[in-house]
Amino acid sequence: MPILSLEGLTKRYGAVVVADGINLDLAAGEALGVIGPNGAGKTSLFNLIAGNVRADAGHIRFQDAEITALSAALRCRRGIARSFQIPHPFVGMTVFENVVVGAAFGGGMAERDAYPRAAEILEITGLRRKANLVAGSLTLLERKRLEMARALATGPKLLLLDEIAGGLTEAECLDLVATIRDLRKTGISIIWIEHIVHALLAVVDRLAVVNFGRLIANGDPQTVIRSGEVAEIYLGIEA
Image 1 (cartoon, rainbow, N blue to C red):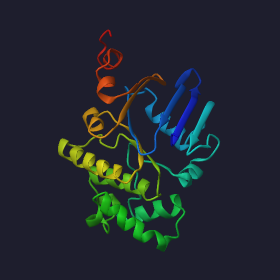
Image 2 (cartoon, rainbow, N blue to C red):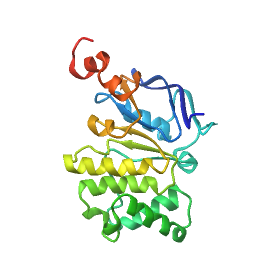
Image 3 (cartoon, rainbow, N blue to C red):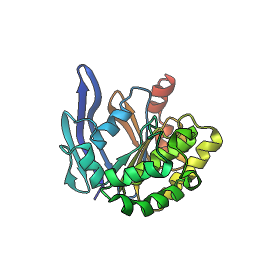
């Protein structure tokens, strides 16, 4: 039984279709990579799954329960957490306080009960030594780690990562990949949108390609990345 099922998921903004009848399943513990050109509908897909926007048609099932009509807050409490492409921490609060906010408001924990979880998450994401620094002083990599830490603090079963490697150096990217690999050992399910394809290929079990709101490829990462249709989308080469 998949942990997440999308059935005919559709969203339009006037004449622009950002999700065109998408059908997609994710197994428990699986890591799925999602690629596609800018404007293909990748982040819109996350917005639909996380509940930031409401679908026009179709169904979303999570852990075998219908969640299509649930708010983003309720979906978070059910176990869906996401990071955003551009980190927006509470810059005047410490790193530790930022993670506690995620655990308390996203995970429904009492503040003091959230302290041990926050400390554990900071250790996992490599931010323990930065715990008492204000978030506004962090580097880009550290802000991205904090973005992931706040999502993890909610206690998710499904983690949505939106271009978390974007803007990083090669060394920073490798460091982040190692962290995500470690996260996978906990059994968490992951969907990761990324333009840095080699980072995805180092982590994911399966790769999906989105273009103009349609799912056009879905399968073994190496097979998908070498397909003629993907080459045509990215390079303009005839398949």
